[in-house]
View 1 (cartoon, rainbow, N blue to C red):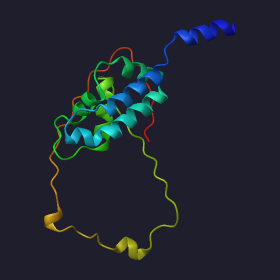
View 2: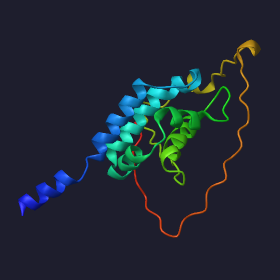
View 3: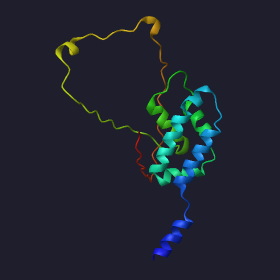
View 4: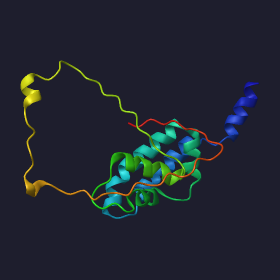
Length: 158
């Protein structure tokens, strides 16, 4: 019985290792503009992390012909000076799974005592007009219709 399992494991490619190697190689040979280069290391780390967590995600990354350079270009397409974290995560995941979405769950841990009365009554410091930057409004993407059969792959962000 052990021999059959060993043979099956030997015949099944280790997509998690292969995908991680693919992403590492693509990061070394990265091609893209300055904005894409700025997110390339972060994107590579996230894709690698997702591949380590999910064999399904890893198999898709390994078999996808698009490169990390293509992924970063897709993530930043249409952005100007700003992209939110969730938009970057969403773009990374959708680069490989076009019908996927990313949802965040945030845990806030309150450590220590509540702020003092002085701290709560203090007014915020306002930045000078010259230091303020405007953020362009971004169109809300239209969600894709849900397929009849749906599978959820749960990955964690770090």
